[in-house]
Amino acid sequence: MKWLGWSLFAVGAILCLVNIYTSWLRYPLHRIRGGAPETFRWASGVPVVASLLVMIAWTFWLRHRESLPLNVTAWVLALLDTGGVHWFLIVIAADRFKRRGGGSA
Image (cartoon, rainbow, N blue to C red; front, top):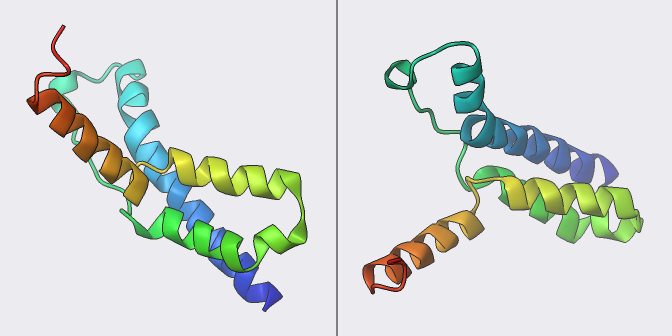
């Protein structure tokens, strides 16, 4: 069971990092390297799977390790993973709020 928990966490963490890179870091790095905005091609990471794997690993195995650094790492990775279900719900809620006129300045 130990190897399964670490495996799920490792794969999920790597995919979370890919999603974080594609969502938050790729465009600024492109601009820093001198790339024009119109030459940038947006790419998607691995939606839903990454943070789901991390949370499954945390729920069934990692939280029983009672390791604060491991718990914090799992939660930070999952929260920053823009391909996660939570970000989908945030975007849908923000869109609804905006359409109802709540987002106008």
